[in-house]
Length: 163
Image (cartoon, rainbow, N blue to C red; front, side, top):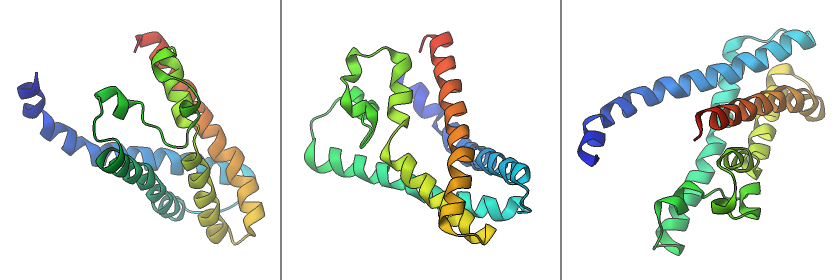
Protein backbone atom coordinates (compact mmCIF):
# COMPACT_ATOMS: atom_id res chain seq x y z
CA UNK A 1 0.00 0.00 0.00
CA UNK A 2 2.84 2.37 0.85
CA UNK A 3 4.59 1.54 -2.44
CA UNK A 4 1.38 2.27 -4.37
CA UNK A 5 1.04 5.57 -2.54
CA UNK A 6 4.63 6.50 -3.40
CA UNK A 7 3.99 5.54 -7.02
CA UNK A 8 1.10 8.02 -7.30
CA UNK A 9 2.51 10.77 -5.03
CA UNK A 10 3.58 12.85 -8.04
CA UNK A 11 -0.08 13.18 -9.01
CA UNK A 12 -0.88 14.76 -5.66
CA UNK A 13 1.93 17.29 -6.11
CA UNK A 14 0.85 18.03 -9.68
CA UNK A 15 -2.81 18.54 -8.79
CA UNK A 16 -2.28 20.66 -5.67
CA UNK A 17 -1.70 23.97 -7.52
CA UNK A 18 -4.75 23.27 -9.70
CA UNK A 19 -6.92 22.53 -6.65
CA UNK A 20 -5.79 25.73 -4.93
CA UNK A 21 -6.38 27.75 -8.10
CA UNK A 22 -9.92 26.38 -8.26
CA UNK A 23 -10.46 27.17 -4.57
CA UNK A 24 -9.21 30.75 -4.92
CA UNK A 25 -11.24 31.24 -8.09
CA UNK A 26 -14.45 29.96 -6.51
CA UNK A 27 -14.08 32.26 -3.50
CA UNK A 28 -13.27 35.15 -5.82
CA UNK A 29 -16.25 34.37 -8.03
CA UNK A 30 -18.57 34.21 -5.01
CA UNK A 31 -17.35 37.59 -3.75
CA UNK A 32 -17.58 39.03 -7.28
CA UNK A 33 -21.22 37.92 -7.44
CA UNK A 34 -21.77 39.70 -4.11
CA UNK A 35 -20.21 42.88 -5.45
CA UNK A 36 -22.40 42.75 -8.56
CA UNK A 37 -25.53 42.26 -6.45
CA UNK A 38 -24.46 45.11 -4.15
CA UNK A 39 -23.86 47.36 -7.16
CA UNK A 40 -20.08 47.70 -6.94
CA UNK A 41 -17.81 47.55 -9.96
CA UNK A 42 -14.72 45.61 -8.94
CA UNK A 43 -12.61 43.44 -11.21
CA UNK A 44 -12.13 39.71 -10.76
CA UNK A 45 -8.37 40.29 -10.71
CA UNK A 46 -8.46 42.72 -7.77
CA UNK A 47 -10.69 40.41 -5.73
CA UNK A 48 -8.47 37.44 -6.63
CA UNK A 49 -5.45 39.32 -5.25
CA UNK A 50 -7.31 39.99 -1.99
CA UNK A 51 -8.29 36.32 -1.69
CA UNK A 52 -4.73 35.24 -2.43
CA UNK A 53 -3.28 37.48 0.28
CA UNK A 54 -5.98 36.49 2.81
CA UNK A 55 -5.21 32.80 2.21
CA UNK A 56 -1.92 33.24 4.06
CA UNK A 57 -4.02 33.08 7.25
CA UNK A 58 -4.29 29.32 6.64
CA UNK A 59 -0.56 28.93 7.18
CA UNK A 60 -1.09 29.63 10.89
CA UNK A 61 -2.90 26.34 11.70
CA UNK A 62 -0.23 24.44 9.76
CA UNK A 63 2.53 26.09 11.78
CA UNK A 64 0.64 25.34 14.99
CA UNK A 65 0.29 21.69 13.95
CA UNK A 66 4.01 21.40 13.20
CA UNK A 67 5.00 23.08 16.47
CA UNK A 68 2.49 21.09 18.54
CA UNK A 69 3.45 17.67 17.22
CA UNK A 70 7.12 18.57 16.89
CA UNK A 71 7.67 19.98 20.37
CA UNK A 72 4.82 19.19 22.74
CA UNK A 73 3.05 16.02 21.63
CA UNK A 74 5.86 13.91 20.21
CA UNK A 75 4.07 10.59 20.64
CA UNK A 76 0.96 10.75 18.47
CA UNK A 77 -1.24 8.66 16.21
CA UNK A 78 -2.66 9.33 12.78
CA UNK A 79 -6.06 10.13 14.30
CA UNK A 80 -4.42 12.70 16.61
CA UNK A 81 -3.14 14.55 13.55
CA UNK A 82 -6.37 13.99 11.62
CA UNK A 83 -8.56 15.45 14.37
CA UNK A 84 -6.13 18.23 15.30
CA UNK A 85 -8.10 21.45 14.89
CA UNK A 86 -6.63 24.26 16.97
CA UNK A 87 -9.11 26.87 18.18
CA UNK A 88 -12.13 25.11 16.64
CA UNK A 89 -15.44 23.90 18.00
CA UNK A 90 -14.19 20.33 17.55
CA UNK A 91 -11.95 20.87 20.59
CA UNK A 92 -15.06 21.04 22.77
CA UNK A 93 -15.91 17.41 21.97
CA UNK A 94 -14.23 14.02 21.87
CA UNK A 95 -13.90 13.50 18.11
CA UNK A 96 -13.85 9.71 18.45
CA UNK A 97 -17.33 9.83 20.06
CA UNK A 98 -18.91 11.98 17.35
CA UNK A 99 -20.66 10.87 14.18
CA UNK A 100 -18.27 11.22 11.24
CA UNK A 101 -20.48 13.78 9.49
CA UNK A 102 -20.11 16.19 12.44
CA UNK A 103 -16.31 16.31 12.29
CA UNK A 104 -15.99 18.65 9.30
CA UNK A 105 -18.53 21.29 10.41
CA UNK A 106 -17.07 21.43 13.92
CA UNK A 107 -13.52 21.53 12.58
CA UNK A 108 -14.43 24.27 10.07
CA UNK A 109 -15.90 26.63 12.63
CA UNK A 110 -12.73 28.03 14.14
CA UNK A 111 -10.90 31.22 15.00
CA UNK A 112 -8.91 31.07 11.76
CA UNK A 113 -12.14 31.39 9.74
CA UNK A 114 -12.84 34.59 11.67
CA UNK A 115 -9.32 35.89 11.02
CA UNK A 116 -9.67 34.95 7.34
CA UNK A 117 -12.97 36.82 7.14
CA UNK A 118 -11.41 39.88 8.78
CA UNK A 119 -8.46 39.72 6.35
CA UNK A 120 -10.87 39.50 3.41
CA UNK A 121 -12.79 42.50 4.76
CA UNK A 122 -9.55 44.46 5.07
CA UNK A 123 -8.65 43.72 1.46
CA UNK A 124 -12.15 44.48 0.24
CA UNK A 125 -12.03 47.76 2.17
CA UNK A 126 -9.01 48.76 0.12
CA UNK A 127 -10.43 47.84 -3.27
CA UNK A 128 -13.93 49.20 -2.57
CA UNK A 129 -12.49 52.36 -1.01
CA UNK A 130 -14.96 52.14 1.88
CA UNK A 131 -14.49 52.18 5.62
CA UNK A 132 -13.69 48.90 7.39
CA UNK A 133 -17.13 48.67 8.97
CA UNK A 134 -18.85 48.82 5.56
CA UNK A 135 -16.42 46.30 4.11
CA UNK A 136 -17.04 43.94 7.03
CA UNK A 137 -20.82 44.32 6.67
CA UNK A 138 -20.41 43.37 3.01
CA UNK A 139 -17.91 40.54 3.54
CA UNK A 140 -19.65 38.79 6.44
CA UNK A 141 -22.82 37.76 4.57
CA UNK A 142 -21.04 37.16 1.26
CA UNK A 143 -18.19 34.99 2.57
CA UNK A 144 -20.35 33.62 5.39
CA UNK A 145 -22.90 32.31 2.90
CA UNK A 146 -20.11 30.69 0.86
CA UNK A 147 -18.77 29.02 4.00
CA UNK A 148 -22.22 27.72 4.97
CA UNK A 149 -22.81 26.35 1.46
CA UNK A 150 -19.38 24.65 1.50
CA UNK A 151 -19.91 23.11 4.95
CA UNK A 152 -23.36 21.85 3.94
CA UNK A 153 -21.97 20.42 0.69
CA UNK A 154 -19.13 18.54 2.38
CA UNK A 155 -21.44 17.34 5.17
CA UNK A 156 -23.96 16.14 2.57
CA UNK A 157 -21.21 14.22 0.79
CA UNK A 158 -19.89 12.70 3.99
CA UNK A 159 -23.37 11.51 4.95
CA UNK A 160 -24.18 10.10 1.51
CA UNK A 161 -20.80 8.54 0.88
CA UNK A 162 -20.57 7.20 4.43
CA UNK A 163 -17.16 8.69 5.08
